Length: 463
Ligand code: BYC
Ligand code: FE
Ligand code: FE
Image (cartoon, rainbow, N blue to C red; front, side):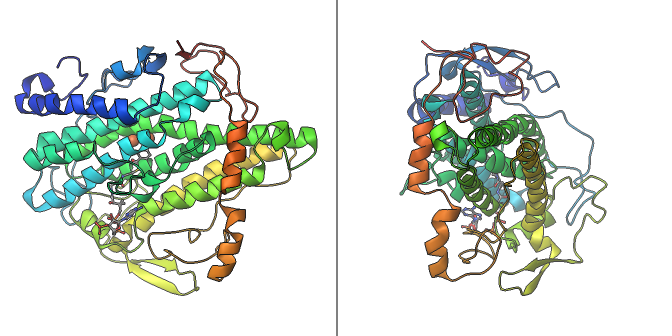
């Protein structure tokens, strides 16, 4: 199995090699069945991780996706203490402590489930890629999410014995959007039908990934901490694809609005800003649900046990690493304030850091509008808008967070969330542009290409 790049001494771990040897063909079968549709024989200009050093990723070559070398990497070990929860001075564990086995397994399975789900969700996008550059980025994201699946399967097979091996198989049998056997978290069952969905997903949903992985990257279970640390290096690229993808759409929309002196730019080949807003509303609210409930005893347990910290728990921004005292105050949609004991509010705290990050990107998009002389602005909806999980689940409110009746919500929903008509109009615009150096009408070209290459480069060699 020397073909699996790794720094976990796979060559000398016979048990793991055996488990992986059983799983690998099933993984390939899964990839062929529900991974990227078409393009199996195309050569894609992809990067592959060959080591965990800082230049381990700088390895670009033309690869056929089914022949990609998915690897297993842990970030280098660090001399550290757990640093938070009930036993902050303890040395991180190299094995799974019996008393936390159930919780750790649940966290790892939940994380692992999202990775293949996203590949399934993005399966059909290659066919409508706005450029070879974008197609290549899509496929890069897809192979890396599949590698994240490997990262979690490694933990399950190496540290969880027989049930770990069973869970690893299950990760290949659940299917995004399947009625009988769906993926575990909501957003990973929502269809990604077009490229605006994709960019919003990378912007908002992958960004949840960043925050969840960051919270796990200081875990007391050291292999989980080191695995997720390495995953974060890939996550940065996914968020780049999302944030700049939306930015390029906004730029193009602004250009067309100025050119035509109109808000309705569909006929000119662009996405109306109002439609862009609806996609943001949908994926942002869907992704807020991924943080779980604001008041969560699971989250309190994870924190107390040292399994999952806050965002940058060990940074100087946080001084009290026990979080026993204190409350998190949340304003319910009826205006009433609710106090949640701090440890139970870990999901809400992580989400707040996430929201700040989203607002930073929003500002950049809005300055794109401003610098092009367009008066309209984009926004992020209130935390209570369109929620299915947590204290705002099922609350009827407008994007500003104002409570309204269910009837009013139902009648206005089509102004706030993408409708079938919006989607079919997007589909009309999103005709594939698979010619080298060319780009679709609805999106601006990127500021630069990949790995120093120009936009006019054969990022995918179609056959
Ligand atoms: N959908 O105490 P609660 C990524 C369930 S993204 C459906 O509120 P907890 C990626 C919950 O399971 C990052 N169900 O929540 C991005 C529980 O059910 P049970 C993924 C949900 O446990 C793009 C019940 O509600 N990683 O990597 O504190 C592309 C009450 O739970 C949802 C992780 O999530 C939902 N949205 O927090 C590719 C990290 N939310 O058990 C990849 C690991 C909650 O009572 N996961 N429920 O039946 C966790 O840390 C936690 O499980 C969660 C939920 C933060 C997800
Ligand atoms: Fe991932
Ligand atoms: Fe990702």
